[in-house]
Length: 283
Image 1 (cartoon, rainbow, N blue to C red):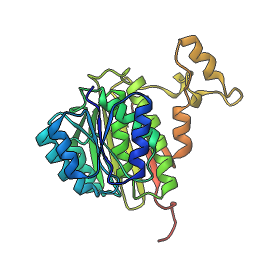
Image 2: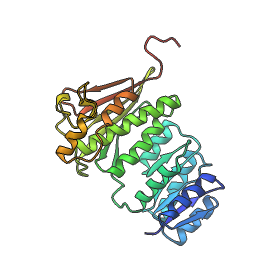
Image 3: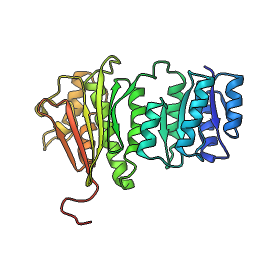
């Protein structure tokens, strides 16, 4: 492992991420700015470069091009003050590994940096099929690291939602995406999940399609959403019988945090809908 390069530019969050990585024995080097960062890259290879949280996303994309000309294999995780859908799309097309804007979570970012440091099969995990600021369609390989990366981009695309609605929407999206990859594809990296993020005048919508055979609501005895009304923990015993890991609350959580959760007849396609304003509201 070649270690992590953190371009800090005096950001407290950068130092916190560095300390979190060092506690799990990952080597970290700091650069005070872009110029020093590029110099360090010329001198030695790094697995991951983390940009400064003081920068704009378009500046980070220009820096990424320079870093990749020096070290084509370096993975770039972007911290930026803010983003626009156009910039997020360009980041995905430029093979940014992941993208974050405030509020930052030190633990989440450090965890993803550690995953990135040991992953060599990431570059083709996410493919943009079609992209406009209000309609982004991608295909993602069914790998946990691909899901974690995709969540960072989709979070940025949903940035125009009110913060509480955004948090709820992303919680639901995470549950549905991981459910699609785990139960629809058994985390087989050769399988593909299709995802769309769509913003209309009144809603924000995620569409997820997994490659599996789907499910029927009555067949979900292993999931909390399929529990009978008089037995809210029936799925726990069912999961034990089937030898499944503890859990099964994903669909129930998703249903409780979006305004509409709609499954196709086959059960392998899902719409998650969050209202930007309540139906019938003015404005």
